[in-house]
Image (cartoon, rainbow, N blue to C red; front, side):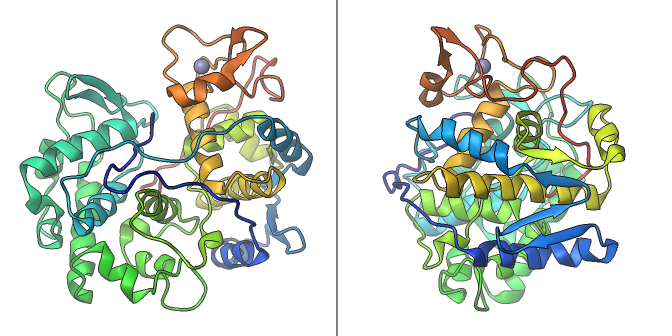
Length: 387
Ligand SMILES: [Zn+2]
């Protein structure tokens, strides 16, 4: 998500202090329990609102250490800088609903990264996906209609994201087109023409009383992740674009993806309690669904804990900070623990945080448990379209 995008139609959303009530964690736990409780690997501590399992646990001490560091920073607001000002509000909602539905695995293990040149600028991962779709919809507004989604083919998806220089880098277009078709099909079944229709049915509620946005979005295959990475991300984009507000905004947690998993495992805010899982993470072996949910669940809870501990930073604002720093500086193979190389592409608004003792390096390097050790965790390998 490089420099995340600012939607020019609305001006910037201002991050405000959000206290995270217990209800969020309990509601979240309810979903996770469906997947994990059967294996009896999960211990719930509702007093602190955190989920710990025998697989991965939140390290409260490390979270407080990170929170203390973050409190000393002027953390940039969470925003996106995409200019969608020629689209209507309904079109912007559909743009994000479509975009996020296929936003997963853009730097797949063992395969080429999604990258290309859009409007003369090099883009990778999310940045490429979003800016390429932005160009595509300007040429064909019908792409934003649910009727079009229900007829999308793998060939069409390939064409939409093809780069003249880098070629066809978007992997698994069959599954992506299936997710988009399902998006269109479910929209039609419910008589929804735009994301705005979903918002109205939910009365803008993120969670809690039914119907709510998490529940309604969960009817789409693309948004069925129990940890709700895509749902949280989509709702954040809609809020940050100034289009939607939520009466229960504190129910909106961070969208956790593999960059954040890698960074939190390395910093030590999440500890791996299972030797088997530890081995899989260090040697890049495929993990199970339970292990995936446990690791991402622990990272989710670590971010929530840090958010509560460091005051004015919302979970979304922290997500943008962590996501950008981990993606650019805490790379899989050559993290910037001692120095940022000349080509470190950390977005400019985060660069002031990287100057430590007049040297530029990962801003978390002094408090990271992995910065001085040669063996570091990787993000877990798991075939998924959840993130
Ligand atoms: Zn760097």
